[in-house]
Length: 58
Picture (cartoon, one colour):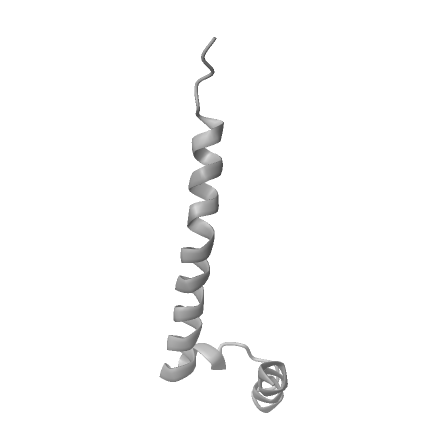
C-alpha cells in the first residue's frame, strides 16, 4: 500500500522526490523512520566495533 502511494506521489510531482520533504507530515514520517532505523542498527555497529578493537590476551 505504501509503495502504491509513493508511486502516486511521484507521478503527481512528475518524478520530483523532494515533494516528500517539503510537506511537514511526510518529512516528519521520513525523519522518524530514519531515527528508528538508526536505533535498530546502532547496537550492531557498536558490537562489531568492540570486537574489532578487542585486545587478544595470550
